Amino acid sequence: MIGSAGSAEKVALLTEKYGYDAAFNYKDAPVRGQLPTAAPDGIDVYFDNVGGDHLEAALDAFKDGGRAALCGAISAYNSTERTPGPDNLTNMVTRGLTLRGFTVGGWFHRLPDFVADMTGWLTSGQVVFDETVVDGIDHAVDGFLDLMRGANTGKMVVRVAQG
Ligand SMILES: NC(=O)c1ccc[n+]([C@@H]2O[C@H](COP(=O)([O-])OP(=O)(O)OC[C@H]3O[C@@H](n4cnc5c(N)ncnc54)[C@H](OP(=O)(O)O)[C@@H]3O)[C@@H](O)[C@H]2O)c1
Image (cartoon, rainbow, N blue to C red; front, side, top):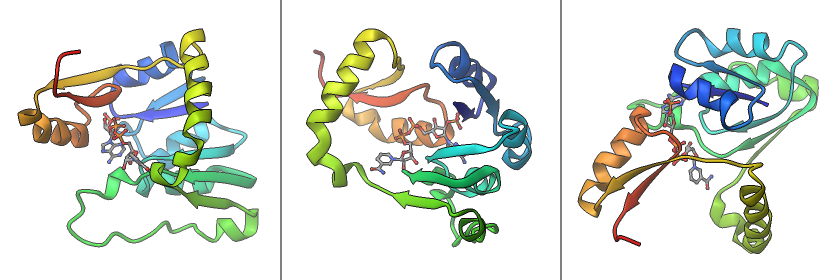
C-alpha cells in the first residue's frame, strides 16, 4: 500500500503509524515521477481523494485490469476555472481499467456492515487514525479552510459540545 501526503511529518506517519508500505510527499516532485519509483511493478487499485496529478499518475501506473474508487478531487476544489481532465484516459481502453465514483450517501444501506468491520479493525489495531479537533461551531470555517490547506493531521473535526 502506497500513500501520498503533503509534508514530511505526514509521510512519516503513513509508514510508521498507519501501516503503509511506502509513501511520498507529493510536493517534493511530480507524482508521475514518484509513484513509479514507489511501485515499480505498477498498481492494481487506486483510492482517489485528489484527482488531477494523482489520478493521472495512477492511470499511468495501472496494471491491466486496474481499478479506481473515485472518492474526491480536492486538488480541483479551489480552481477558479474548469480544469482539463487526465491526458491519459485512453489507458482505460488499452488496459481494461475501471474507474467508479461513489458518495457515502449512496452506501448507507451497508452502514451496519461497515460498523461491524471497522469496530473489529479499530479494536485489533489493524486500523489506526488521528483527529485534528477545532473547538466550537464559530471556528468551523477556519477548520474547513485549514483542511483545504492541509493543516490537519487525520480527520478534521469540529467539537460543538463536550462529551
Ligand atoms: N465521496 C464521498 O462521499 C466523500 C465524502 C467526504 C469526503 N470526500 C472526499 O474525500 C477527500 C478527503 O476529504 P476529508 O474531508 O476526509 O479531508 P482530509 O483528508 O481530512 O483533509 C484533506 C487533505 O487533503 C490534502 N490536500 C489538500 N489539497 C491537496 C492537493 N492539491 N493535492 C493533494 N492533497 C491535498 C491535505 O493534506 P496534505 O497536507 O497531505 O496536503 C488535507 O489535509 C476529499 O476529496 C473529499 O472531497 C468524499
